[in-house]
Amino acid sequence: MALLTAAIPSVSRDGYPSGGMMVRQGQGMAVKEDPGSEFCGNIRNTAFSPGEQLTYRVSYVLAGVPLNGGEATFNTSLEKYQGKNVYHVVAEGKSTHDLFFKVRDKYESYIDTATLQPYKFIRNVNEGGYKTFENVSFYKATNTAITNSGTYAVPSCVQDVVSAIFYARNIDFSKYQPNDTIPFDMFLDRRVYHMHIRYLGKAIIRTKYGKFNTIKFKPLLVKGNMFEGGEKMTVWVTDDPNHIAVRVESPVSVGKVDVDMTDCHHLRYPLSSKFDR
Image 1 (tube, helix red, strand yellow):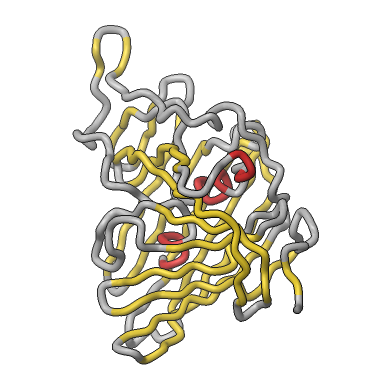
Image 2 (image 1 turned 180 degrees about the vertical axis):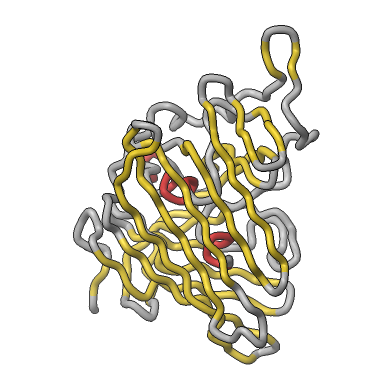
């Protein structure tokens, strides 16, 4: 799903080396320490609220020809999960031209309202014939993630691919100077990855939705079939308390991809970063 790969601080290369199942050592487990992020256990949600709906359009430029790639949506609700209050975030992506490359993706995360740490993550992916299903339950008491393929050791502060987006929206960028990096960890594909975003400062950008004052940063990417590795992707989020992504740009293996926010409803705050002049 292009947006989910693009609009979050994406996976870096320095995952835990084994990527294997949980290893026990005596009474404990062999788990690396948290990345030292000041947010672990302290960050609180001030950016979004239940009912929020975001819509994005994904476009590609292939061999100089612009193509409408598809649409992605994020919907947030307040629910109960095992007796706890959670934000249930559902992210879905679908392609516009199925004959070119069919995409039907659905990601779900159940996020603790108090800590913004995930309890459960579901990924159901169908991309050009590639299919995968992942169901992960996080257990904080034992620092483990139980998946449909085994049990894995994770840090005490860890995100999934969806919760990471909403976690990152609550970063207080006023604490940082341009070129500072902000780390945290994510569990995906049975592996823990050390991640960071590099803060680049403030910028004004015009999108299909309007003109915005924004916060600009670059996520560290892992090289894959589509995205190049390194810090080549750029993300702009609104410079207001909502911190929603309004534009993502990145080179890909056969051209480049642009992601633009096209619609939003039930934001926690007015979209004060949008202006017309």
